[in-house]
Image 1 (tube, rainbow, N blue to C red):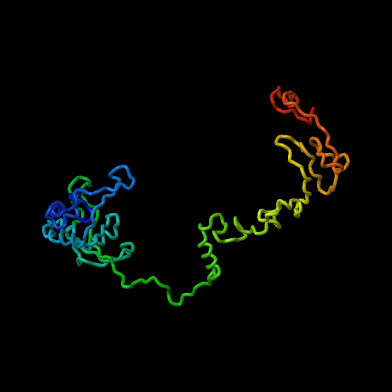
Image 2: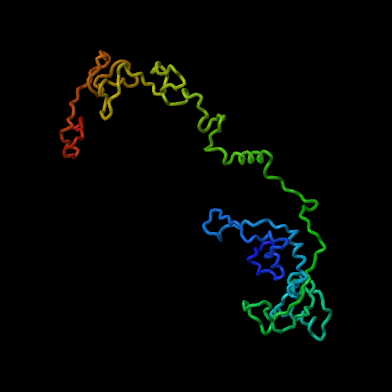
Length: 337
């Protein structure tokens, strides 16, 4: 009655059907004929959840209490708490013969006796004779329908069983005089573990959070780039760094390029316009026989730098047979002929 809708009333005794269908029933609001279905993202109605009103247990039990006297005796018996039943097969010969001797032989004793654990394979407790049972009798299926077959000869014995009750109440507690072993972890280990657990999953990538500046990750350890970086150029934190180009100490120790020097255009090897700065350790001019490659010399070099050789120019329309190309616009290698 507390979980079944009115459409499923065939599962309960007939005397209670009126409480679910009669409009004058005191609990008719517990069984609405129409109710919304919450699909909750599902496609079909049978997958949804029926939104039924809550049932007041006190009102439900009070309404059913008036109908209990109308129940048939067999139905009322199924609605009461009965005795526990112990079924013993004929194959368990020792226990089967012991029970049959006490209850169904010419030397039968009292209708109740204590089981012998040695015969019952450790089963303790009391058994009582079941008056409705006869050994080797027929066993008829008690319910309507043919879902289970009936037996012409029952090869088991049925008795009422009283499970023994323990007089000792077990308490989950430590025994007196228990000695604990030395702990493997001390208080420092516990605090360190708690600290790691508090930060687990909270720190993206290991770098400090907003307002924190450490020595690892982004945002930490970047206060002195000039002394610890291989970049020869000053940092952006110094506004006058561009005017002091070449005057700051650097790791590569290359001197500043001469005034007026420009880098070569894209795609052209060497220094196309002006001569490059001298190599490290050379103050003034290049040594004899080590003139750099490039285009026409810069007049500003004067006596410091000798003129660079004038290499022949390549022709885009000539074929580059040395590389296996049959014409096209690919430039000829100006260092190979």
